[in-house]
Image 1 (cartoon, one colour):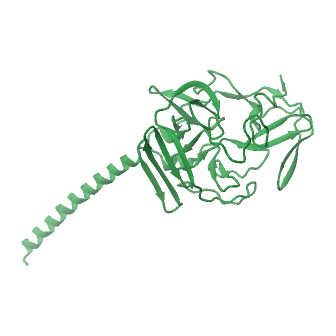
Image 2 (tube, helix red, strand yellow):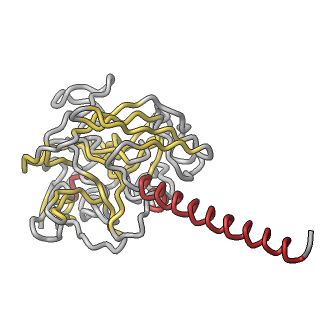
Image 3 (cartoon, rainbow, N blue to C red):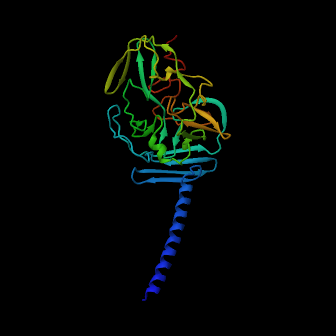
Length: 313
């Protein structure tokens, strides 16, 4: 083979190699674009973290089938404040494809699910009980009681189910589309859940200006009992009842929702309530087998509105 022939062959190989590379790049970009559209059918199978989540549109519903393992790193469990171990679940969510906005806020224990199949459950089952008659529901993000939250503002239930109480930077990174608004999941009523990286949307909650009159208060769990001194202390955000919604204080409504480009969406925020505690659309709340019906008491039930708000200034 002479020099000219060898050079011609090399140029042909280089041409077709570059052409194939361009086609592969175009295919990869197209695949990425499809993968970032989580409003249609999609699957997440992450070998590193064990995530197995599929969303399939079935008639009037988005059906999410998942093992509820996150597609990102978590803290090590068991850990101090949370003795539970993360384990795969068998969960199915039926999310309305066309949400119906009612404008009436309805409390939701589990307001939504992230795109990776991990649920949002902003409130806790932890209670401070006082001999003076008050019960205070403990917030997840607070300094009084260590509930074992990791760097994702998440922890593990006794069932092994990992769940978010607030924003997770790792979750945002996993679904970041380079826009300010990152699509994170769907609420139970069908409206999408977003996070603004710039903090463009402010919640409308504030700590009530008041003091506790409760006495002889105790927090207990199967492994620990803690005396809690509240009398004459100022409300500081430790409890759900320390907070109040003030219409117009921020950009978001009482469910942490807002209209963006003509469509209603929910926001997960860096400040309280972190994840909205209610929904503005029609939905069916999942009932846990061990959970008593609303109004029949039991640890983990939401205290009546205003309970624990002992004394305002």
